[in-house]
Length: 78
Image (tube, helix red, strand yellow):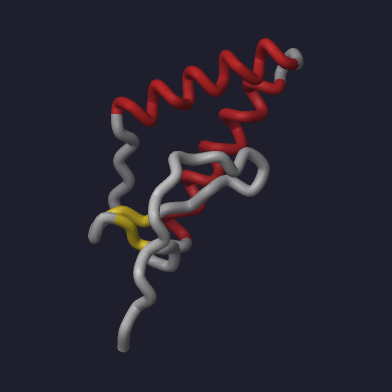
């Protein structure tokens, strides 16, 4: 599985780091460590997450679970 972090997502990571770092020292670093760990886990768990827009798998972080609202994917019909 090939993982590509879009430029807009890269900026979201930077913005998230800055936001959490302003809340509590080192929380921004924890945020990045957590998200990069989640991203790395996509390789191990490739293809098990809900599919959006016909080609993107979505995984929300367990510790920082916010994301843009999207319609839930239709049930897989077999």
